[in-house]
Image (cartoon, rainbow, N blue to C red; front, side, top):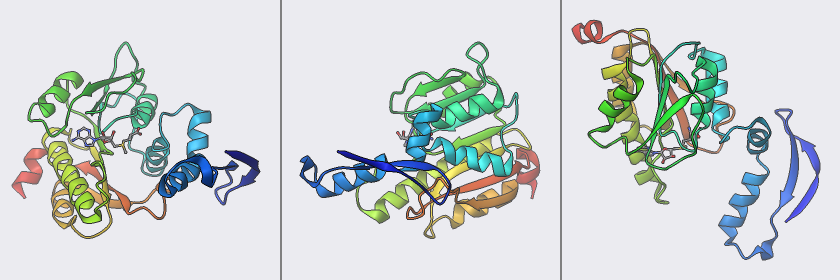
Length: 238
Ligand SMILES: C[S@@+](CC[C@H](N)C(=O)[O-])C[C@H]1O[C@@H](n2cnc3c(N)ncnc32)[C@H](O)[C@@H]1O
């Protein structure tokens, strides 16, 4: 690996360029991925800021724009590992290790995040919703989902699997959120989200598609933000 002097990105972030040599022994696709990862300004910034993931900046940017997280709020974070969103949610809601009001879930293990309780289990497990609610002890103000199915390399399959996670997360949010609460979920651009969109429009006062700057431009990733939950009784009556 060789390091080149720093350059500035269009976002004004300073990046130390690193090259991974072609003779590194890696497959060319892995070498390119590693080089892109190491030169990603958000990756470098997350290390400096102490965030577990570059994904933390997606939540920061969305929250800065839409003001979802407020002190004292209860938050559920679906697909929490390695913990970037839990860190941001705990900091912005003032959740502490003594009195945590952020609960995450992931089937991958992760290091503890101060101010968050994290369940190591599959959200699609029938027991998961009850376990989350038990850990939170009260209705959430915000349900976040950054869940992504492991990629198979087959784009359509990956898309459908992540879309399914978004739908299940939306159903869960509608069944547990406090009136006035918010739901934010990863989805993919590409058309199959019509049903979930209709569902969210029925139950929330506003629904937005959001592509935060930290989400790579070339990625089909997109976020669905549903704000101001109408409440179960009022939206069921419509
Ligand atoms: C993009 S990562 C989340 C990154 C996280 N927001 C952060 O800031 O660190 C997606 C996560 O979703 C998790 N995931 C996918 N399907 C899941 C499921 N059915 N139950 C629980 N977690 C799941 C994956 O294990 C992965 O850790």
